Image (cartoon, rainbow, N blue to C red; front, side):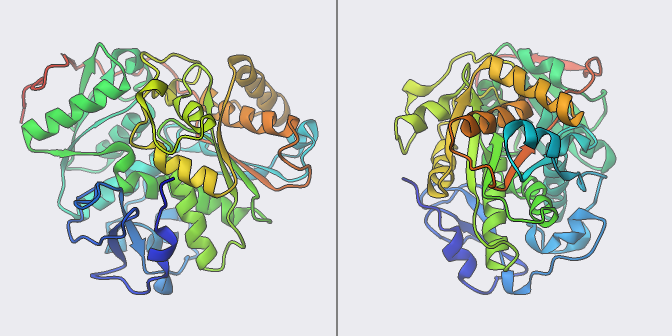
Length: 413
């Protein structure tokens, strides 16, 4: 099993060149190449290792300034808050009674501007890119990340985004045409869109955003967990989130480690990643006890209710999520379509919260574990509800059809 070096790196006091060191979380190697997402030595994930001895969690309504010492920027002035965050983390008493849980807490990320936790990621990522002098990048998404990035780019002048999307996810994009955003559609899936974005970045000499391996994504998504850890009157014993690549869960784990070393969290919770059984490649690999992801677990042309987590090939991300879920006493599991539907209805019925099917997938995972007796009645539980459905119809119209050929689309700079 992959062993992550977060704890050892965090305990190594001192930070070179500012508030963080840029290190590989697999082999520990430090780098001065702050735009490098993968280690030059072992190809592991790079991340910002913050100087915890100098970190202060500030009393600020601006969540970016509140947690600035735990974000990957040298100068907090680079952080531009765009209205995301400060979402409720509340004791779901009515839902808890139905499930036989005394201390069930829900982090309601549906309150973010684009109704997705990915708004946090976009603000942090573009702040970091501003500080590092990057103004043009290519990325792929199933809808939430691209919508969040497009919103942020419209609010922050000077960026040009090249967004690649599979045709099945085009209707999930929710932003107007704008000079700062160019949209490319493929007759293919999310993984192919990511590969096309990477090829385009290489051919056009712009930055490939990196997806799971972009630490800014994980650092931004971490903020939902830091808020929840601060808001809960008791530390969570279990954490549930729906996963496709799992970058939010990895961010939450890193935040828990940081808070534990800062004395703000007594112990690490057990992290549980939940998938839908129509697209559950990570859960299948986990059930087999595999430390790495084999092609036999890949789900070609995945389908399912929870469109936001339709990733059929998490080859590179899986070892990291397997490591944190198994290492904290959690798991990666799958739930059925009807379980997801029932969880969504129950959430609306008891708490009046209409979350998306991906959020309902996380809750369905908790319900299944509670029924199996794997979550005690008095155990404090946190479920991260990562978003809600957006109104359909606001879809970019100025899109460019592209294919799978290595040099498509041609550079348009």
